[in-house]
Image 1 (cartoon, rainbow, N blue to C red):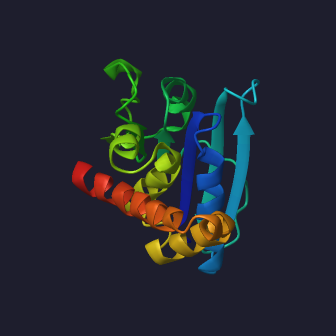
Image 2 (image 1 turned 45 degrees about the horizontal axis):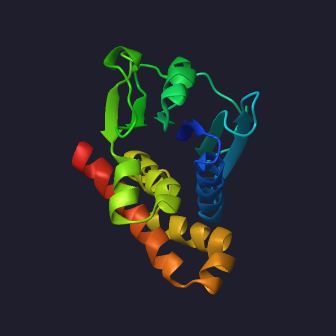
Image 3 (image 1 turned 90 degrees about the vertical axis):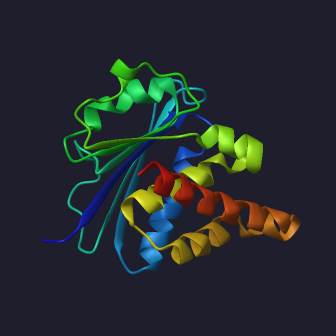
Length: 188
């Protein structure tokens, strides 16, 4: 049986959820794996909850959507509410501890819940604009879905034109990736 990673990322429009999913799919593809990414936007395309369904496998993927994620990431209070239905007993649930969420709002059926201060770390140590890359690092560390090396190559492919304009952005994005991986290592 092929290992399939089912990843669901959710946040407010503009938090970079779709960019993270695209970069992870690109990295998986470059590793020679199958990847299917499906964006899902709320009724309000700007400012609504944005969800990305991502599957990565060593064999063809039969269906683009899924009922239960291996990892579910929620980056806002509204996102926590929207994605609880995708959490099962084997799901790792990651949320940004910088947001206010009541304990009872978190999915009690999750295998593991990881609270990481992503927004806070991005603001204090890095830059708010790399918050989504920090989250990508967290997903990579929590799942092992792609290598850090391929993730960096995919970031380069997606954002290289920005790095050409401002070379400091490359190091900032790579540091955000590494910092996200560190946060999950510390949380678990």
